[in-house]
Image 1 (tube, rainbow, N blue to C red):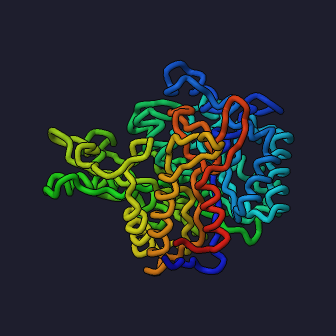
Image 2 (cartoon, rainbow, N blue to C red):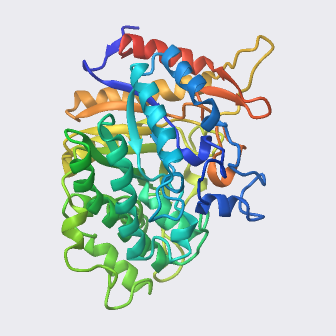
Image 3 (cartoon, rainbow, N blue to C red):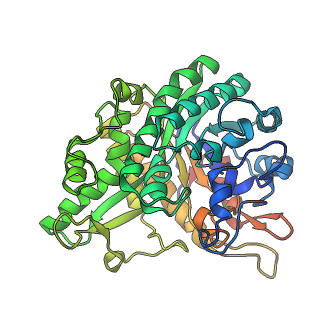
Length: 453
């Protein structure tokens, strides 16, 4: 097979998140996060584990950066733990926390690796949660204070900033479904949280630009591609609603379209919102949310097969019976066509200046064999098929500028604990040994060639 080359300057990297890898949950002045509290609450994490130690990256980061360099990674997306910087969420700055990330950034730059910094990947300071958390405007105001502190410290060296990772998860999955911290099950609180997260993004953008001149600023959303289980009028309407709930509610306001009117009406009809509608939205909020960004970060893993719920005003449900494709260990279908469809849709409907795939990857449990190697052929197949979908999207005109594989190494997979392994590097949690998997060496060759066979 001939190799398909990506554009010159295309960035290849991997991604992680602070709570999932750092450990050191009480060290060097770090405050408690909502994930510290949630993981220590019995019954919340599938295997009863916590991120107290995780991959011990807080102590092993020099080894991890050296490994990234040896694999030829061109960029590394990581997140900053807000409670390491401001243990109480606002007020006193913890200099040891700032120094940790400053050393990490310096090491990445010395290794020739471009740092992409995510400012919020879900580990809200518990002190902010104790004052109402994301359903309140206070959280949005506090976020801007935190962003100002850390971008002043790192803005001279970091030139790629992501305000938030996956607002759907930190609002609805966390406040409506209750699977993630803080574990609420209150739909209206979820929508209020979504608004204040988006608002905090909009407020933070000019602060980042002031503190980090000539930097790229963006936000990362997680998207799904919703398809009907069967093409009935009811199911097609369910697809519209599910797309509005998961995708449009977040991307529309970022691009000046406000919240989707059909979804406001649907939420009112279902009794989720009052007849007054979005009473947590204040004058000027929507203009702030629509602040110009330099890129859109896209996280994509799978599609959603959807059917209408039962009964009047019933919400759409995902239909496992009609989800028939190969699945990863997370139970997610392998559907690379969805990445192509999504990238084209975002480009043609919203026209972001640039797009980065900020997460894409697969969970497979393959461990070291008798030869000491990890032969994760399924992950290689998954990544190759998605890289080819990205290549096809670029050929269709999508301004895709880079691709971050999730994840650099196996880690604490949120509510699933350590039961899922997304890494291209195997982690032995007992010894903290790192073993690059076959997928890591395959990816190394992709990067070297800037091409996929």
